Image (tube, rainbow, N blue to C red; front, top):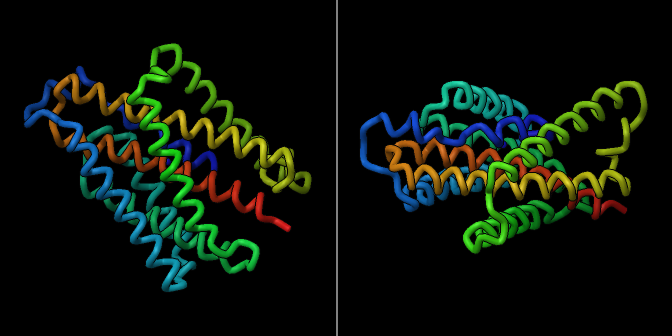
Length: 244
């Protein structure tokens, strides 16, 4: 959905245009289709991550991340469902996140942080699903507008902090592990969590519009990019909180 802005950049593009999709033929999509494809993708990412940590092949993190980034850009610009690309993205990001997590866990202070991040990510995911299903927060045009503004704002701050880090140690302090960094991470996790509501709404609208079932892979891709982003931010926050 990957570091900071890169993860975010891939986390918002996969909302199906019902008008365009319904012009295609095929069995109408169901909720089960989306659930199954997302479960397969998430399961693949989890297995790939675990195998990377267990094997100690952390050197694969960077090339796997680059593969995931390229694949995500292809899916975003094509805006067409693709099972192979969704699975390649999920597997690649699983390896990348596994490598990052494994390297972090080499520090005695960060042992077991990967399990905590997985549990935290799953907790936020299912928590936001309950929020969406109960209607506690509704995805309205105004909500979408505010979310897009928040996403752009977070990306701008991340990029500004990155540029500033070239001229001053720690940049603006958004990623140095200090109090401001902890606060910023909490805000970003909140934005990522509420982005899940937009993903759920996209799936709901696709089912209501009767788009072809093959679009379940496109929706699964959107959910995976957000989940990847969420995991990274939770992992980052946990690393801040567990610093000596």
